[in-house]
Length: 193
View 1: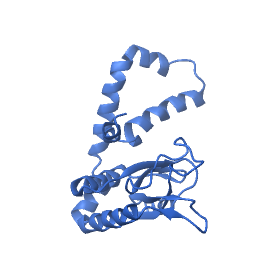
View 2: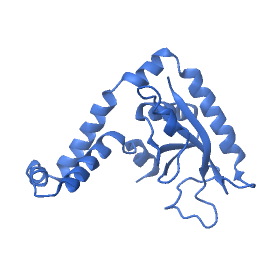
View 3: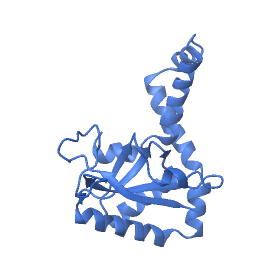
View 4: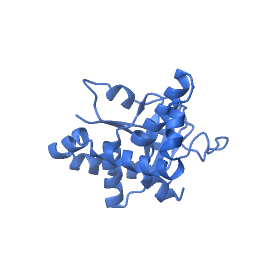
């Protein structure tokens, strides 16, 4: 009913790796993967895991991986779709014979997963799987932000502009991205962005 992929994550504080290539840092907690090349994590599940981490004071960090993927990419396609999330441990020199990770990150990842699983009763799983109210909330947040930066007249002029189909789809996709699957506002508040 719910799928987790536990994997290594790229530590951005590895010598030779820039912050643009990987945001995670060793010693800062498990990485909660927002998206990778194979999937976008389920927002309800992601929020559930973050809520448990915050409740217990477990440090965590968000990660996005534009290349590569985890088993969550296959899990989320199971049946008619399975809420899935990848949780990584920031690691230097992944896929080599000498990967290095921070012991605290390992222990916090284990603690987080154990505590999340303890809380996944039938009601929690149903709420994560079937409660779509968060989409309406995100849409409202997106729409209110857009109204501040662009009037309906401007929106109409873009919507009805002579853009080719691909550009219109890109504009529509951008709106869907921000309203449904963008990193939650908590990330921006937490990191001061």
